Length: 332
Image (tube, rainbow, N blue to C red; front, top):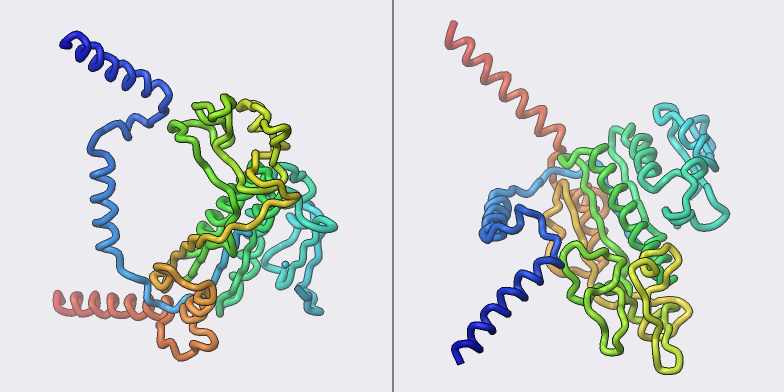
């Protein structure tokens, strides 16, 4: 009996050590108290945060999912990257860019010499709009994320999502969180999922470490329905990481449809800047424009009584200067 227990204990340790071979965990995360410390630090940060109660000068809405030009000497129309890059923001008030006959190309297929990226278009827009001393409203849509999912091609959709993230980051570099409210959300989800209990470091577009009940591999990324339905004669094709990571690969789907559908769960919303604390909890989508309008003190909330950040800054500087003068006077 003791011998069996010994073998059992040894087997557990062997399995534990073998299990780590599949896990790619950063060295810092191996410390047993890491997440306790990080959680404590995050709570401390949250408790010390103070909401920005100033009026938002600029509003930026990023939507991951289509204008009229004024007769003005400072109006520009461009259709290629060269002309786009040549536009001088200081001498341009209105800019229209039409780079493709229909949708812009997927980021995976975009010709950098012909079409600007979403990030480049966001940068150009902000540099033109921020000349307005009264502020601006900018709407940015990562529309091809949606198209990639409908096509059942996760690599296209996720690459678009990465570019969407780059655009958000660039907008943050070009604006100030003190006077710019940035909101990031989506108008719907998709029947797209990740699963398979894969280990840390496993490629997002790769296959699970284990086999399915039919003895075949399956991808971490799957669709509930769409063109990726591949069951024939009661069986589905096997696959490997090389196939699943190719640009044209269709993730397997449970229900055959010519186009994958939207999902029905709530989507996340993120915000930073003036009045960002208004974006919390579970809200109806109609709440978003109300919160943004209130933050900017525009109709129907022109009586919001929020102070401009610039006014408060000037007042603070004035108080500081008066304090310094008083101190100098006292010393004299």
